[in-house]
Image (tube, rainbow, N blue to C red; front, top):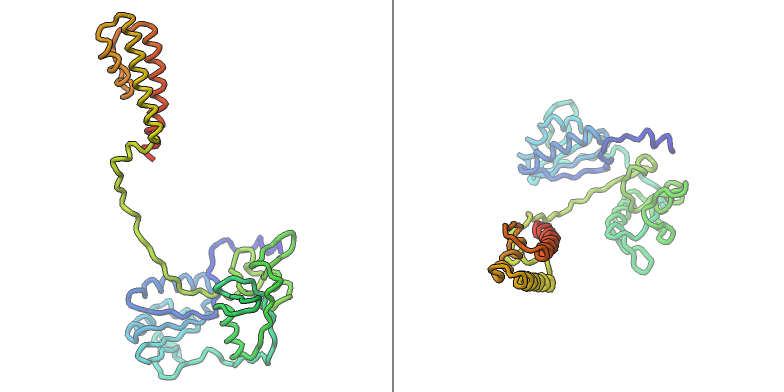
Length: 309
């Protein structure tokens, strides 16, 4: 197995599908052609079956594309009742008929064979009620295929634990049941790089409806200038501002500094705005302003960071 893993292709691949039913319209024909280019390059165009649905005029122009010549099995079914099929003699144009062609040259009959299914409860692919299978998309596919190809199913719902992965030299889950032949079919297992080539996998791709919205426009509120700190923090900052003003006033009043009231308000305010001042002060007052400056550096740095975010 290790040698096989080392040879595993590193590029992305499109999984093999048994049947592709594709709706063709004027709006999606260009994107479908791009998809078919990738299918031809990375898929199995000589094995896959393609059924194209749409209006007759749209299908007629769609089948003129060169890339469709690389699809071995393809038909077109128009809303007007016309059937497009490959001509018996090579031609770039499809033939029209009223009879639905069949991809099957020989009918498959399994003669009532009983297939063992390994199934873990993964809705909506397979559902259980009271420990018994009650439905699910993949289970119903196999059920109705059994009516056509003449086989029945025995579903193991107790032993498999999930889809399975490689652990301690062994495969577990539904992958292990299929790989070690404890089951004929595993429901439901996705294709991964580890499982690629390990077991024969059929992948069904359902249509999915997506709802997309654009990013909302940013409308910052004016209140955002107060968001960086909580109301309690703002209250303590204001109290600190008042306390430093009173402390400066008392220090300058005792040192007989002129205009003590004005300077005790002006100096903390200037420092809070990251601005300097040119005032002759006593040594003890300079120490208090230095402490206030350090306090403002810490507070303003945190404020700016939170405000921008």
